[in-house]
Image 1: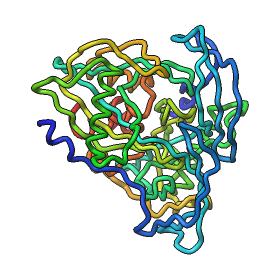
Image 2 (image 1 turned 45 degrees about the vertical axis):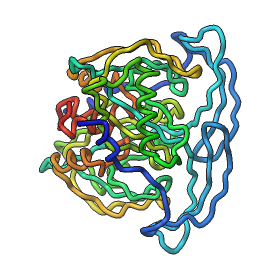
Image 3 (image 1 turned 180 degrees about the vertical axis):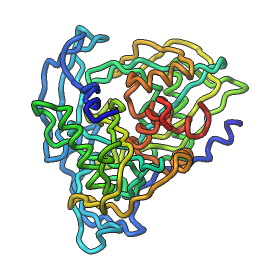
Image 4 (image 1 turned 180 degrees about the horizontal axis):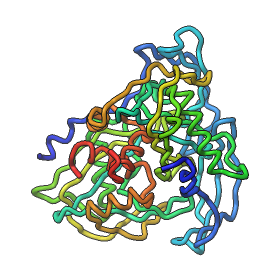
Length: 207
Length: 207
């Protein structure tokens, strides 16, 4: 698989149609990270009387399972302040501007940047491929957040993590597929992005 | 396995200690569904200078994979307003009050209630068991939301879904393990709670 094939993936889009219609909306809160909207919707199951819902708006994101040439996966150890814990995760990050002329290229570029910044790796210059694995919705009753999933294989270590100022990554750890599986089975890996990548890879027979 | 064994599961807890300390906090928004907190933290990697973070507070939740006596899984089709789409999911719901004297019993009771309300099933009276599968964090950089995971097996169909007024469930569908796997592989199942349950069950060799 060449990098040229990687743009063959679905974009997540929210829009009216097929029985869905947003009929009213007001923003009740906004800061640089979260915007809260209260809106009224007609839905396929409620075509006559709008229902009011509270929605947390968030940037889209990417999450990537990096695989070394020896087949091991790279996990990073990251401080996650909302849960006051340091978690083992696959690299991930938000997409700053997604309404570019070529959104798929923006998503791919963000995935490659996060691999370098969070795990210190790049795609292998000749053999490396970024395989799209769809997307997932972290909390679909609450937020429009959506996360594009990729498997990067093989990757080469080129340096240390260089996270953004607001992040703290304390370790990068190669784990075998068996150890990854054990950590998930034992509730040692608890974050949705890593579990979603594992589910997609497992269902596709990639792990 | 009897129901008596099901209380053997870890509770998710957020607290100071092990290098974590919340040193200041102010609430910047609140409605019945979401509360936004801006807080300053000392962390293991930043012990000297607090970092400010924005946190969306949400109730804890449960999600359950129901399995019929013939081994098929039950999916429900639910309208999810923040993403303007109808999704195939396992049953799930929020926990209204978790600081009860016996929080594990509250979590179990909520799981059983959601099975009945969202999928129209109950645990088999003699053979049924609710197997805890840990928990997951939907979006750990953004919210303290956490979701307890269970496998309910076997379950018996006793009626139609009777969702709350704010919910709309249009179908309950039994699927084989192979069909569930195909839907996950094909990006037809995109919600974190169903992917997290699949990942845990796959890693534990249950599916």
